[in-house]
Image (cartoon, rainbow, N blue to C red; front, side, top):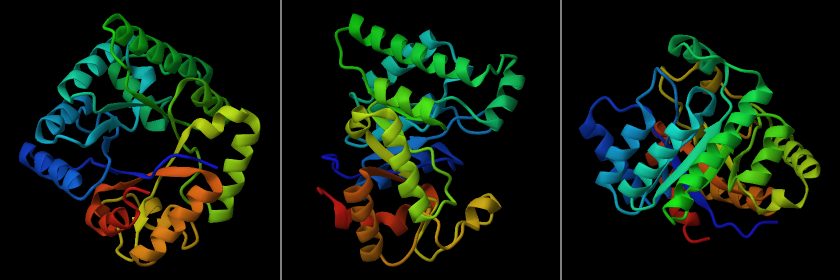
Length: 273
C-alpha cells in the first residue's frame, strides 16, 4: 500500500510567552517527533514568525504550516516568506496550504480582502505553489515539501498533482469504517498518483485523558468509535496506526499540543518503522 515511514507531528497553538514556545519546540524534538506544525488565523500567533523562532531553538525538528490560508495571501508573499524560513531552518520548513473555512471568511472580512468561490480558492493554491517553486528554482534550491488540506475530490485531485502530502478530508467524528470507505473513494477518483502521496490524519484525543476545558466541545466529545479518538494504551494505539498504514496508507499522524506527552510512548514504539 505505501512505502512511507511513520512521521509524527505536534500542532502547537498555546504559546503564552516566547520562552514557552522555545521550551515546547525543544521538548517536541527531544521526544522524537518529526514535525511541529501551526495553524493559521487572525486569532492565532502569526505562523511564519512563530516557526522562525522555533527553528532557532531546534536542529532536527521539521516545522510546518498546517495549514496556511492560501486565499488570504498573495502568492509572491508566501514565496518570499517560505524562502526565508527555509533558509533560517536549514531546509526544515514544510508548507501546508488550504482553501480556508468559515473562520477564514471572517478573517477575510477583517483584512478587507475577498473570500472567493471554492473554485477560485483552489486556483489560488496552485498559484501559491507555482510562485514558491519558481522562487526556489531561480535560486537553484530544492523547494519544501507541500501539504494540502481541504474537502472534496477536486482538492484531493489537486493534491495528487501538486503536493507531497494530503491531510485527509475526513470528519474527526467518522468511525473507523467511515475513514476506510472515504479513503477508498478518494483513491478511486484520483488514480494511481494517490498512492504516491503521504497521507496524513489529525488525532484529537489520545488515550483516556480528556482535552482541556477550553478545547471546543465538539472535539472534546467525539464519539467513542470515531477515528479521531485513539483509545487504549500506547501498544494498542500503535497497533491501530500500523493497521491504518497497512490498509489505507496513512503514515503521517499529528496530535494536538495538549497530548504531547501522552502520545510520546507511541512515537517511541513506532520510531524508524
